[in-house]
Amino acid sequence: MNIHKFRVNDLSVLLDVNSGAVHVIDEIIYDIMDFFDGTNDAAVIERLAPAYGREALAEALAELHGLMEQQLLFAPAVEVPLTFRQQPLVKSLCLHVAHDCNLRCGYCFAGTGDFGHERGLMSREVGERAVDFIIDNSGPRRHCEIDFFGGEPLLNLDVVRHVVAYVRRREAETGKIFKLTLTTNGVLLNDETDRFLNDNNISLVLSLDGRREVHDKMRPFPNGSGSFDLIAAKIRRVVDSRQGQNYFLRGTFTAYNLDFAADVLSMADMGFTQLSVEPVVGKDCDYEIKEEHLPELFRQYELLAQQYLERKLAGKGFDFFHFNLDINNGPCLAKRLSGCGAGHEYFAVTPEGDLYPCHQFVGREGYLLGNVFDGVKATDLPDTFRQAHVLNKAECASCWARFYCSGGCHANAQLFNNDIHKPYKIGCELQKKRLECALAIQAALALHNRPMP
Image 1: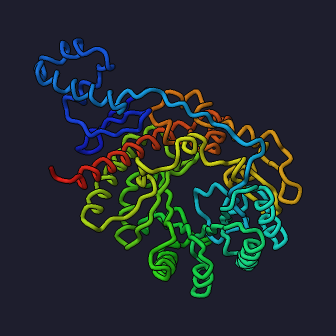
Image 2 (image 1 turned 180 degrees about the vertical axis):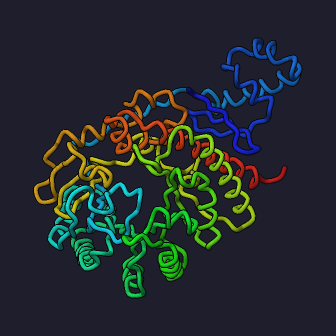
Image 3 (image 1 turned 90 degrees about the vertical axis):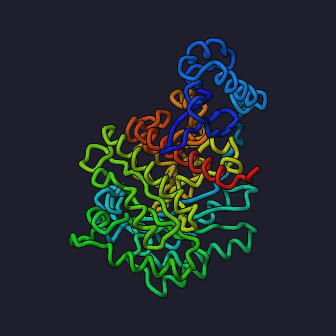
């Protein structure tokens, strides 16, 4: 599939898949593209003449041929040789500093923090060795990343502080530069912790699900009471303390709140501007997203896109992760095809120092790679993950979104299909709808900003 046409709200859009060119089109072009293949003008005119007239169709077809001459329509196939170094270069670690949590979220993929095993906290020794592991295996790569994760990482703040200090020392010794992130539910944030996070330039991913009733239903304390009021106030304080920068609010929607656009907008109305709300990934449970929910979820994404655009044009905009698509200066094509790097560039580290392909694979049988003390022992797995890119996935080869989506999440594919090469279908459908909305938004913004003739 080398072209894709779609409508989002009142905008009709044509994507040329190979070139990445995005065209806002009118009704006649929209209908022509049901039949036009670049060579069959006469057949198109004959078929559509009763609706549009021959002269109008000839003019429209001439315009399409002009785009073809510029290789902005029916562009030739893109040759992207994906070559990898013989040894993977590790760029990022997810440190599970705490396999424990102070909330009992109903949809938690980590089993309320313990990942299906015993609860526990990472030691200083494991934390230091994890830092050394990424340095030892990052080769000439200068920029590295560490995300403090859990469970709830602030339950082990002492080790977080220790590892941060160790990172700074090792940066000075090696010339490496580390980007640090901490993912937290916010319960343990306080003035002192806020200062530590800010002083050390640690980016924050803050968990909030939107409206109070939605958040409290799925993110209660162990005693069943809601956590929204406490967490919203603490998140507000820490975001204000860093002048609204260097953070993301990250929520989850479920079958209980299919009207999730209202949750995104409620957080925007609270004054938060860096937002991400993701569909829950559940299997055989009452909150899971099912195929029957897709029409309503598509409608919600379009509602959100409309509000996103209106607020952006009014100077009251917010950033929504899935709509932040740069169609001109985004990641290179090879990067978009190869994906997140799980299992070869990116690893998760358990409190005991065990290595897994990513945080969602932790505890899954057959995906233990090794540990930070002895390195990667399951040496076939990194190459398996490196080769699980879009070009090697049969279901992705003809998909119009193949140059944007990186082939979907490996962990979700394994969970639903027991095969990282076979994408999770519902995830694909939602990703494609988000991409349509993002492309339409960028096209609309380009039209708005286009100089008047």
